Length: 269
Image (cartoon, rainbow, N blue to C red):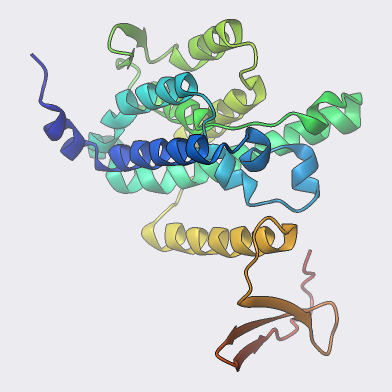
């Protein structure tokens, strides 16, 4: 007989929170009848400045089957939170989950760009990706390197050797779910190997908080710039040098203005 669910939740606090967030977002999407085109990531929307979709696409699921499959795999991978002796544990789980969300999303866009520009495959200009699979595949890969003797349990009855799970799951999902994003899953595997082999390393609480702060800034400014949501309290206007931005917060008739000081030798792209 297994442990009561309550004790498993206590052993996997970060995983439980992420599952709760994804489930809550799925419920909201269903209730508001939001389509994947409104929250998903595509090459066209990225070119238009919808950079916030890198985040929303990762935590959004359109179908209940998609949600259950990803969350079942994520729950099984929650054992990572207890592997402090392997350099993982709760803190690193949160740190590198953040890395997986952002870097795998950017890598997918890079793959789309290469296929569109080099091979003229226009299909990838409009294809829209949603789901937490890239992060799930990333953690499968990391665990397969750090603890190859583990097994991945799916739906409570399917057990896969973790050492082969990333590529087995990649092939399996591509066959049974034709609309599954092969490149999205592959990007998670690539970033997972980069983390497991130490090519991406050095994440601390300081760097994680700093990264989260920059993500929040880019998220809200791109959300406003894209016109997807109206932030009436936030305006972007030119200052003396029109190439540099000024941020102004307006509240009760008062204005707080922050001007950017030019820095020589640095180009703002």
